[in-house]
Length: 91
Image (cartoon, rainbow, N blue to C red; front, side):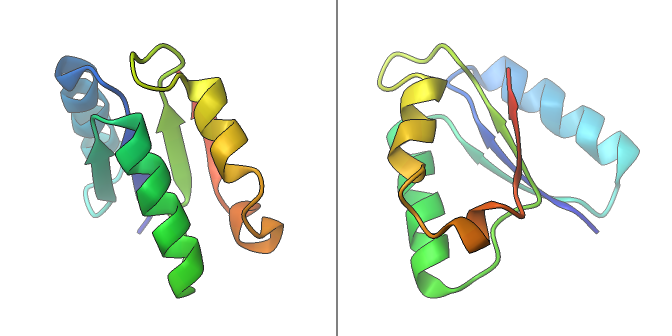
């Protein structure tokens, strides 16, 4: 069972990505954020709590609040040991 984190401000893309993921892995755990700042807060809180991060991060490049590259800047200072297990895909 894999876990996925989707950070995209577009509900339609989040729905499509979630449905495709479910077809490939019906038992996948999918967490979705429409806000880049909420996604960053989730990642930081997960790292700080010692909970494993999702296996995959699907990250939108163009978002109004903070783009995908800014999200990566925000999380790059978190402990690398925990971050390196999460594969990041820019959308």
